[in-house]
Image 1 (cartoon, rainbow, N blue to C red):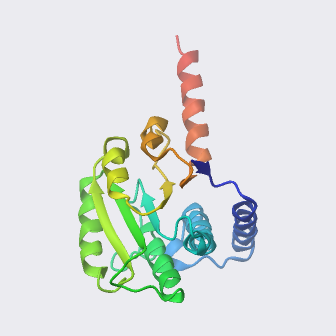
Image 2: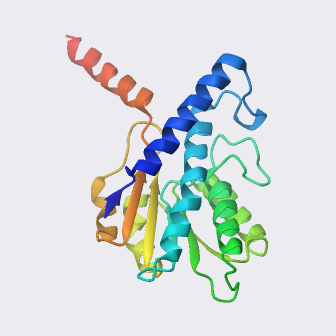
Length: 216
């Protein structure tokens, strides 16, 4: 099981940080991400990483098939409620569908699967409606959804991940995080994990803990 710290990922991250600096200085933030610069950076990194990564995995004779697993899919705080263009759900589906088309995959023999897990009932309801609506649009990608906490669903998700390689995207909201043990089912050489944690939330949490300790 690997962590997404390869040179290409670091290079992409650096490009995104530079782009955000330009946005802050010259004011070119897309309407979908107004006031959500951190979400834009995260989604840009995901989109730019998925294409070369998926092509690499699908070109390897040892794997040739891919499961993309979003453990905290949402949607939440998005502005595009119809097409979810500003969510990891919409971005991963569009990106991986384009990869499959470019590789001339047969829609009847799908080699890419997207698995979206969401715990919040209202968000899961939106996710399920969207997934049902776009299954015909994304003909080259199988779409599965799970409702529940990632740590509770991870074993079932792993069982459904029957492709030869798994890319797990872990992006919990807030600072509460997730039990690292929930990644246990995905241990092995045929998996990679991208973890996103909001530093500002963690710093705020640590600061509040210190203040609480000072109180008599």
